[in-house]
Length: 123
Image (cartoon, rainbow, N blue to C red; front, side, top):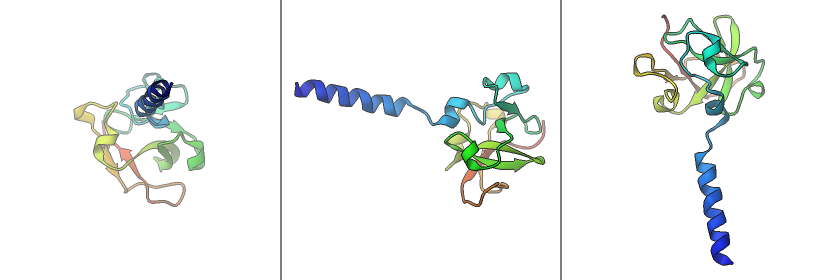
């Protein structure tokens, strides 16, 4: 019986490790050329960035964004951008030539110190 509980606990731990945050599940920050490539109807392809950037649009606060993202103002509109601690976290769904940077140089809708993944400007 004790072995069964250990096995169940181990399986639950593996399942938890395999789960990404919601920003990963939603593919926020993914490369795109059209909104249809964002694989989620709430995301918009922000084509002002090199390689595009799938971001959820029309947020008014961080609470409007999936876990692992924050509401930022970019090009006169608000979008949910993936949060990060380092550059590696920004590029799971991006090619090497269109890598995002983890930046604190963003316009947050709410006060905070979170960094966000921002790809290079231009196309």
